[in-house]
Length: 245
Image 1 (tube, rainbow, N blue to C red):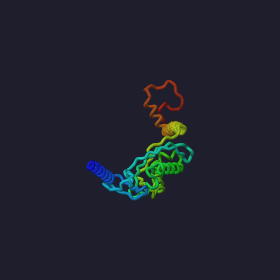
Image 2 (cartoon, helix red, strand yellow):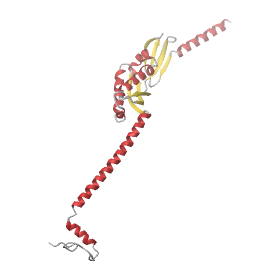
Image 3 (cartoon, rainbow, N blue to C red):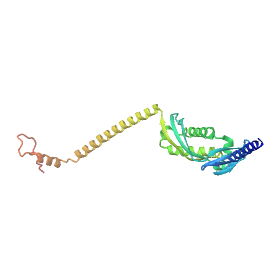
Image 4 (cartoon, helix red, strand yellow):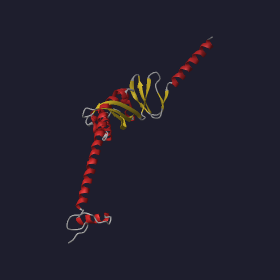
C-alpha cells in the first residue's frame, strides 16, 4: 500500500514537472514578434525562434510585422461641394522596433483605433481642396498627398506606410448626368464650328476662283465648250469669242 502511494506521488510529480517544462517553452514564427507580459506588465519583446517563459506568470501576445492590406471606402466632398465615393488601398506594417509600444497603446486594435479614423480624416481634408473636375486629372497627386500627410500624422506610433493609392472612385448620378450633357453640348458646338469653318473655306475658295477668272480665261473656257456652229443671233461689234485689239 505504501509503495502504491509513493508510485502515485512520483507519477504526479513527474507529470507536474512535464507540464511545467512544456509550458516553459514557446516559439515565435517568421514575420511575428512576441510581446511578453509578466503578471500583466510589459516585460519585453522577443523575435523569431524558440524562447522560455516563466510558467503561470508570463503571457505571450503575438503580433504580426508582415505587410497588411487595408481598403477604406468613404464618401467625401470636393471644393465645389460635389460628392465623390472613393476607395483607398494602403499597404502598411508594424514597426518591429516599436511592437511593445503598439501593444501597450492599442493592443491588437490599432487598425480600428488609429489607422482607419486618421486615414479617413486625411482623405476628406485633402480631396476637399480640389474641384471635382480636377479630381481625375490629379488623382496621383492627391494619393501622394494623402500618403504623406497620413504618414506624418501617425509618425512615432509604430506604423510604417508602404504604399497608398486611390484605387477607385465614383461621382454622384447628378454630376455624371451633368458631365454627359456637357459632352453632348461640346460635341454639338464642335460640329457646328466645323460646319461653319467648312462653309467659310468654301466661300473663300469660290471668291478666289472667281477673282482669278480673267476675260481671256473666260473666253478660252467658252471656246473649249464651243460646238463649232456660229450663233444665228448676236449683238455687239465683235464676233463671239474673238477679241479685236
